[in-house]
Amino acid sequence: MLETSASEPKTTSKDSSSSSGNIDESQHHPQRQHEGQPAEQQRAGEICYDLAHFRTVRVLNNNSTHKSVCLLGHFAHLPSPEKQAIVVLEKRSFTEGQVLTPEQKNHKSESEKEKSCPVDETKTADDGALHEREQTFFTSASQLEKEFVNDIYGNFLCTVDPALNRLKVTIIYPAEEKHIVKYTVQNRFLVEETPELYKRVTLPHLDQGQLSLEWLYNVLDHRKESERIVFEDPCDENGFILLPDLKWDGKTVEQLYLLALVRRRDIRSLRDLTADHLPLLKNVRARGIAAIRERYGIGADQLRIYLHYQPTFYHLHMHFTYIRHDPPGIGCDKAHPLSTVINNLELLPDYYQRATLTYALKESDQLYKKIQAQTEEETEEPTAKRHKSDLSVSQ
Image (cartoon, rainbow, N blue to C red; front, top):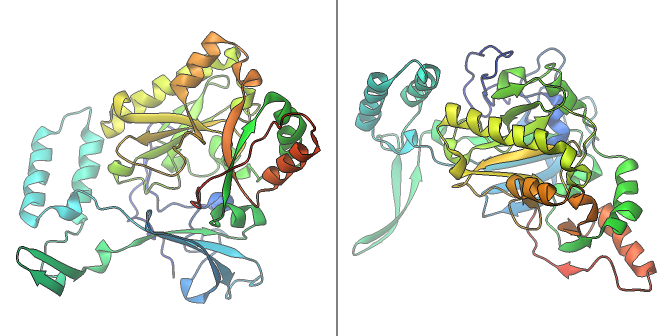
């Protein structure tokens, strides 16, 4: 069975109403499964998944770069086994604690205790406990199997303690066609979306229906995931909630990835932003940076802060990622730096209602098909230009 600690050991929750909360990724909720949320043991009516009963139909994407595989299939043991499910298996990054020798770990733990101060008391205690219980590769449990040795060079396979080889598992159930398209590797094409094209095609497409935002409203209303909140500004006009993105395990700082979900529900995307929203954008930037610096020790000059267009879901949100980490979606065909967005709106209040925005869509995306149909109907110069991109999948 998938245990409640499927991603990380469960830790004690902190006060969810404060600006800083426990971000243990072992707490998962079905409301976010449509955006890729792993599940846990059944609790209060939640689904209990068992990978032994998963039946693979086909591989959607096998990504050697990100060391992940996306599978489409069914769970035979669930009440509706005919419903499709997506299972994503992803190998996790190495942590500092895993590559220290036992002696180094003990020395580091003692040093952290000596350096602890009131401001960093919680963080130091958490980190110290993590180092103490985290396994290391450099023990007798790690067994080397020689492939070859030639002079000073040697290649080996290493069998390690199972605790060091845990996978991050993401389950989407039931999976809709939009999820399948999102996780399937396929040709992608660049679209140059003019303001006219947005009004004629993109906006009507959004109005016809997108993925449910119920999971997001549950977060904003503290009905779910309150223990994962890193920071919260409760202001209805300029407030937001900062919490770990699903792509991050919530612990490996080298892969830091947080989302800022604004409290306002009337802003769907970059296209809606005007100079009236500058106080909101500046507040998210300033207070998000401060919260991350205080909790993780990462400064503003090591953070990428950006918006996606097109976004995965249409409720304004910003991404905060560590500059040493290269997550999907940071390319120029997707990410718009928050500082650039602010500067554009200061120069021209309705910049994003006038600008032509370039982004990539998959060949099977319904929006792309509608844009192509619109382009073919026009007799003058096309407003959407088709450029074949790569076969990489944006997750």
